[in-house]
Image 1 (cartoon, one colour):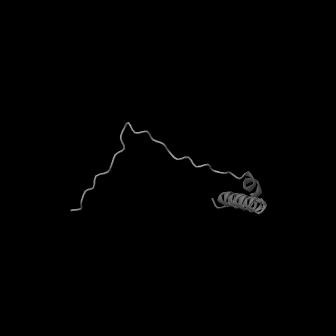
Image 2 (image 1 turned 120 degrees about the vertical axis):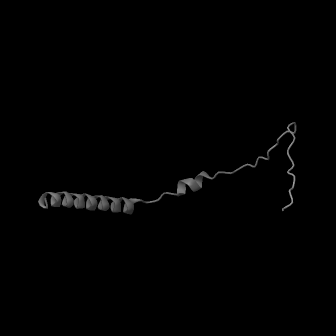
Length: 66
Protein backbone atom coordinates (compact mmCIF):
# COMPACT_ATOMS: atom_id res chain seq x y z
CA UNK A 1 0.00 0.00 0.00
CA UNK A 2 1.09 3.55 -0.61
CA UNK A 3 2.16 5.84 2.17
CA UNK A 4 -0.38 8.40 3.25
CA UNK A 5 0.80 11.94 3.72
CA UNK A 6 -0.92 14.56 5.79
CA UNK A 7 -1.99 17.76 4.11
CA UNK A 8 -1.33 20.89 6.08
CA UNK A 9 -4.47 22.89 6.59
CA UNK A 10 -4.50 26.66 6.91
CA UNK A 11 -5.62 27.88 10.29
CA UNK A 12 -9.06 29.46 10.42
CA UNK A 13 -7.70 32.54 12.21
CA UNK A 14 -4.86 33.17 9.76
CA UNK A 15 -5.54 36.08 7.37
CA UNK A 16 -5.51 35.35 3.65
CA UNK A 17 -3.48 37.93 1.73
CA UNK A 18 -3.53 37.31 -2.01
CA UNK A 19 -0.82 38.83 -4.15
CA UNK A 20 -2.28 41.29 -6.64
CA UNK A 21 -0.41 41.73 -9.89
CA UNK A 22 -1.31 44.72 -12.08
CA UNK A 23 -2.36 43.76 -15.59
CA UNK A 24 -1.79 46.17 -18.42
CA UNK A 25 -4.49 46.09 -21.03
CA UNK A 26 -3.61 47.37 -24.43
CA UNK A 27 -6.65 48.91 -26.11
CA UNK A 28 -4.65 49.60 -29.27
CA UNK A 29 -4.29 45.87 -29.91
CA UNK A 30 -8.08 45.42 -29.58
CA UNK A 31 -8.75 48.07 -32.21
CA UNK A 32 -6.30 46.58 -34.72
CA UNK A 33 -8.24 43.31 -35.07
CA UNK A 34 -10.81 43.95 -37.79
CA UNK A 35 -11.54 40.77 -39.78
CA UNK A 36 -13.24 40.89 -43.16
CA UNK A 37 -16.13 38.42 -43.37
CA UNK A 38 -17.39 39.37 -46.83
CA UNK A 39 -16.25 36.07 -48.48
CA UNK A 40 -17.91 34.10 -45.68
CA UNK A 41 -21.18 35.99 -46.09
CA UNK A 42 -21.05 35.44 -49.85
CA UNK A 43 -20.54 31.69 -49.34
CA UNK A 44 -23.40 31.49 -46.81
CA UNK A 45 -25.76 33.23 -49.23
CA UNK A 46 -24.78 30.80 -51.98
CA UNK A 47 -25.33 27.82 -49.67
CA UNK A 48 -28.75 29.18 -48.69
CA UNK A 49 -29.80 29.67 -52.31
CA UNK A 50 -28.64 26.16 -53.24
CA UNK A 51 -30.42 24.61 -50.25
CA UNK A 52 -33.64 26.47 -51.08
CA UNK A 53 -33.42 25.39 -54.71
CA UNK A 54 -32.88 21.74 -53.75
CA UNK A 55 -35.85 21.83 -51.36
CA UNK A 56 -38.07 23.30 -54.08
CA UNK A 57 -36.94 20.58 -56.51
CA UNK A 58 -37.67 17.88 -53.92
CA UNK A 59 -41.12 19.32 -53.19
CA UNK A 60 -41.86 19.55 -56.93
CA UNK A 61 -40.72 15.97 -57.49
CA UNK A 62 -42.86 14.73 -54.61
CA UNK A 63 -45.99 16.03 -56.42
CA UNK A 64 -45.03 14.42 -59.75
CA UNK A 65 -43.97 11.06 -58.32
CA UNK A 66 -47.17 10.38 -56.38
